[in-house]
Image 1: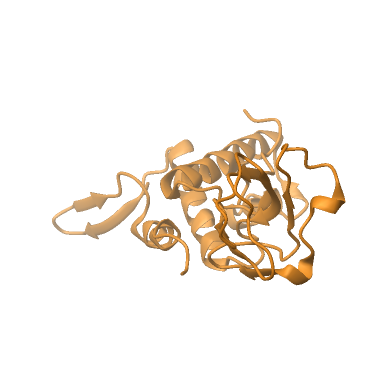
Image 2: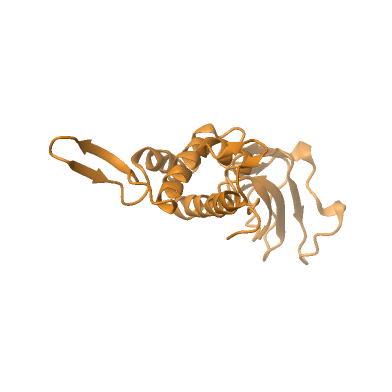
Length: 203
């Protein structure tokens, strides 16, 4: 069992997960065993969502370097920008410690949805790994409500599997014919949400 929740990736707080599963209150689960299991499953859900979308979904800090190509536009690898605070440093010798090499905020325009950076009065000087960008990208779980709720739905699914409840992932059910259709992977409603985050950045 996981001793801690991976807070870098966790799309749900322990408190929200426990309340959603009906295992206790915001102060914690009713048993330490349940707490350990929920903590594990929060990690499982979060890692699976990242893997399914091919992205780190939760907002986090990044430091990346790339080759300057002489233009004034750069596309950052992670999106959307979660903060307009961004530090851009251009240095031919790849020494990014001096503030003298930083681009001032007044020279930077951002498309936060697409994580596109456009320099106003200068360009990204040509060079090998001579540009460093420090930024924050991803989704705040307080704002991406559909993603957070999908994580809760899938948490319920994996919790039911863990506890071997009979109604695991039943999508359709016929009573007299005793015919059932089971979800083999993500529930349909969860997959629909993940598809919107897999489709790519807003242009």
